[in-house]
Length: 137
Length: 137
DNA sequence: TCCTACATTGGACTTTGTCTAAGTCAAGAT
DNA sequence: ATCTTGACTTAGACAAAGTCCAATGTAGGA
Ligand SMILES: [Mn+2]
Ligand SMILES: [Mn+2]
Ligand SMILES: [Zn+2]
Ligand SMILES: [Zn+2]
Image 1: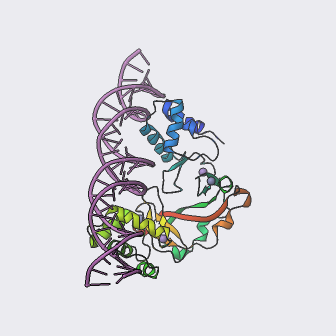
Image 2: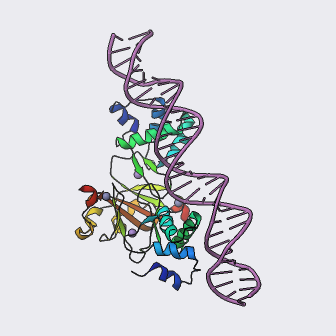
Image 3: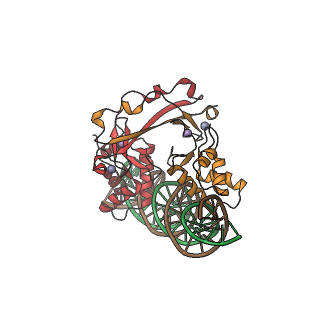
């Protein structure tokens, strides 16, 4: 569970107070915050941080590959610091809770050649949906 | 390739001029329009149709299961009249073109029991991403 | 310490979608 | 054929999520 902040320091990323708190918010397992949630958490530590800065920082983290953008529904995108192991997501249809999952096998190999339409395919993302134990009870 | 309009008539759906043109727009293979695109196409036939009516109609079509809502990116949702055969999507990362695909096997069986976190899983959607032949050349 | 290229800010703006109150109409009943 | 009525449509206000910009601030190298 290498810390996002550590990874950024190693890269020699220009480190401002704002970028630091954003990186600190994006830490832990199964973390999938929206930009607004990141802003809310960051504001607790650095009240004057601007919404635009959170968006800027998240976009840059995604661009350099240190954070993944996840859109599980048609709502706000979520930001995921778990880039170490490629993974997929399991989402509760009711409350929106998200868990990281690691399905076996390669979904890409399940797609027949005659259905590739000449595309150069680079990636397959899988989203599992269901009801979490909390919402079921 | 049963026509969406036919399916709606069979259901005894209240048929207005507005609903008719929306259903006519959502016809064909690999059709995945955004609400705005549906509105644009519908306006060509019925200029006074309101944006809200398009949204209302699409929501109802989704609710009764005659159209599927697809969100491949974090942008606008897309509406898909192909509900006959369950399918997945192949998306061009550059131009956004979408093709229907039918991968082999059940992605659900690839998810180990110990990674289900007590969820009752009902569905798995797969999105393949790559560059289409048009964008590659 | 100074400089400056890069980061931050607040607010306007855009895109996508929802909501409501008032007007219209499809289709069953007479 | 006309009436009736609940369902449908409309315009525009509103909301959520995200982008853009010109002015201002600052991290980090010289
Ligand atoms: Mn994740
Ligand atoms: Mn489709
Ligand atoms: Zn839940
Ligand atoms: Zn393309």
